[in-house]
Length: 388
Image (cartoon, rainbow, N blue to C red; front, top):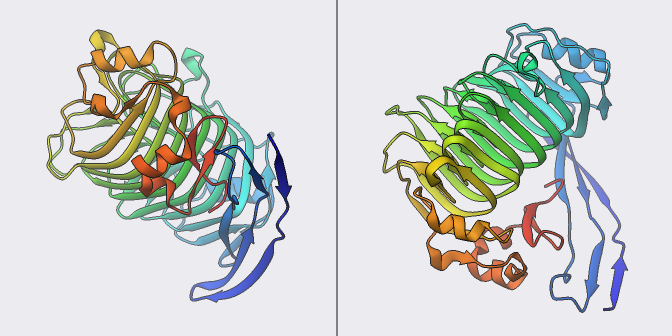
């Protein structure tokens, strides 16, 4: 097999934005060209805007003050921050402003005092262009688990029209012992939110109670619009373990719309009692307004009495173009025996090696044809680009 590594230069452009100075930085990655059908074309990592609007955060001390203040102001990161000695107090503060991560990384923060996440609450806020790495909320020890809603980014979303976009979370975890839920973006959501362009890799979201979701633990009384999501990790609870959402409560206002999602239950997606789903673990709300479109699941699903499905469990949800693929020798058989909502058996792939770029182009073109996604030769999956 012959391959050629091509290096492509980066360019930088500066644009004035209505809200302040915005710097658009374009990053081009290497292109790998060769005879392997899975290694053709040029891979680009995309563009993340950088804003200089509002208050600058340039130190861990700045970050600590910001996270422990109730504010509706605008902030922006100016550099990567590794904060292993930063201790956040367990105080209930609400962020209702705008936070531009500017493509920088916040890393190495451990919270073991009961605080529910980096942010306590989000209300009508915007957070974008942010990378989190090695952020750990609680531990697996019984008394170090958070006894409340729990999230890596935030404990809860309780103000309408919160907007979360262009977020990457790596090597992070959240542990709870409360039924409000645990998720990477938020544990508990009670007001409308949009979550767009989010990638999770090697995350653990674990509760000894109910409702563990890749993005959100529990939704109660609101609508969520979710698009372009890649989740890789472990979600575990007693009931309601889902790749994107743990539990959708039986509330007439609950509406979930998902477009373009790939979920890889890398370790396991487990409800130790019942109701596990590749996208939604426990849907309690019957609604014709729920729509799950262009979705893919692979990995291990585990629930008592097979009350699980590659899409969702409990009450069915509307979906279109749903697929699932065997990841190990046992998963495809268990998919077929599950009592939850699963992709049609005609949309099962018996081996992940069948997931070539040609297959993705034919089966899930809304994902493979989007400029936000890129093919990973090691997993045979499309993942979101690091920055786009």
